Amino acid sequence: EVVNFNQFFHRIIDRFEMSKSQNVAFSRMLPEKEYFVAIDPDKLTQVIDNIISNALKYSPDGGTVRFGFTVKDGFMQVMISDDGMGIPKENVDRIFDRFYRVDRARARSMGGTGLGLAIAREMIEAHGGRIWAESEEGYGTTIFFTLMVEPEESEWE
Ligand code: ATP
Ligand code: MG
Image (cartoon, rainbow, N blue to C red; front, side):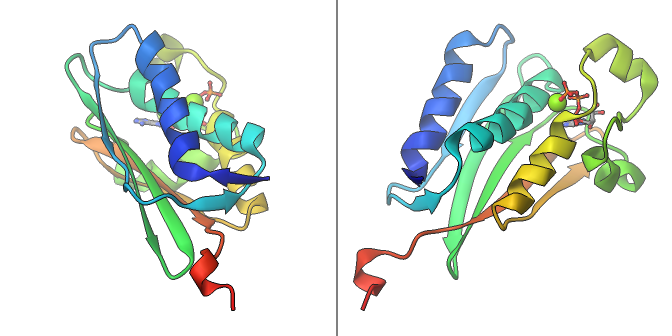
């Protein structure tokens, strides 16, 4: 299904912004220009829901979750960042493994199964994209993923 990504992303963020109970600000840096992607919207919703709920779960009181995307060479790069506790360098790539949680104490207090990002990676790769994380312990985490954008009308001929 071809979806207007700007609208799609705003709607998901709106839903979290209306229902969140934490004192966490949302900051959107989405381009004005509209871009279209061929995706399974239910699956992409599940991916983004998990990333946002992780960002909220690990945000400090008064923190900010930032949303953005850029487009280059036919690919969109989406980023969702938080200024939470972060992830130790040696564990950053493992958060996409099934059942992996950074530490057991944290896992116990936060709930969840450790499957969310493993499913996200499967779904993004099934869409031909990539997903990864950058994190600085004590400063925050950014999750990035890519999707192919649909060519614009002016590029058709
Ligand atoms: P589930 O998503 O299944 O409810 P979960 O959130 O623990 O459980 P994932 O979403 O796969 O599982 O995340 C795996 C682990 O990566 C988390 O348990 C947490 O330790 C770490 N993690 C994920 N996102 C963040 C983040 N934004 N900041 C800090 N740690 C994170
Ligand atoms: Mg999760």
